[in-house]
Length: 459
Image 1 (cartoon, rainbow, N blue to C red):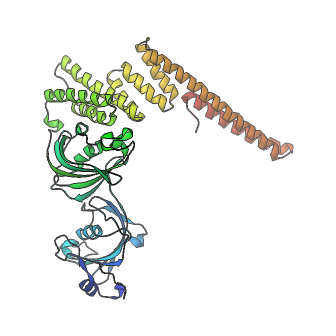
Image 2: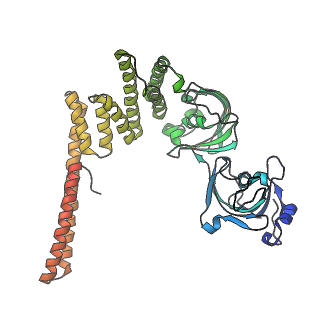
Image 3: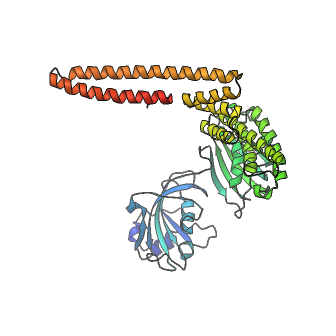
């Protein structure tokens, strides 16, 4: 691109600058957005559709009147590229930039605010000019834990997406540290990609994609091949993966509300069986997907008769218990407690739910609560040796924490005494300090009692 080095563009008419040096960056080449680079950016990548970009900008009318500036607010402006969050001209212009680049953009009305304008600052059919600096950009994060990041190379058609259970036809190219290890056309059922050797991260991204879309997926090990790696592809443990995925076609599955109760029960049996297969293979996240399907289908179902209602409840309780077990393996202890609570709401003497909730609480150092759960297990089944052992472990942990508290407070009192001695020899001074020490002593005792009540460390 052309750079103006001879004369500041701020001293020239925008029409003259863009006519002489502007590059048409519109996909249709209709000169709707013209661009002139003021400062070159870093060589390398450019932002893609869906990326979260951060920019500084100043917007002016063609007569030079300023209508907006992030610089004056002293705060970068962030938006998702290509998602219609800004005017079309900015979406197009920023997509052509490199990190650190500063450029001028001239946007015709059709790429700005059109015939309506944006009163009172922008009149109808106004041509706008922007000075934009691209500060940073990053892909769209698809999961709460940041394990899957998507960057869209080619936007898909329409607004329809595959749903859970859809059959998708995709082209894959998988890379690990720039090495191409997998390239193929493959079809699989969303939620069951593991059956075709496709990582969970690709599977989970399907519900965000549209037909014809081509995107880059950056997968953390949890959503790739995990701590085991994949010997077939010569991929070691805990490896990050990059997949280029093109969604060629898909057939949607029925939504939950489209299924009758008989269909839901049949599908639930299949999902439960497949979840158990994944669990036994150590694919806990894949198992979670299957058990969550059962909960989705049956959580709001009600049987016509007592027998049918019991069948529904048995399926649902089994799925929630299995979810709790998966989350124990994944160390997601809050989710263990959540699923166990749902079971206990329906069956307050459920031995497995009480035991698994106790284990989760024990791992969270909630020793008194955990011990209560294990004692409830023993009330339901006095011969449960595992629960009896866990009670002993809880008691030992509580004792250890109390001993630790004693040492902490003993050291604290020693420091108070040493400070008291150093404070002065006068009787009056000692009297004041002893009052302070007594106050600190009372506070420490209260904290210790609260700690003993809860069986937890003091903060």
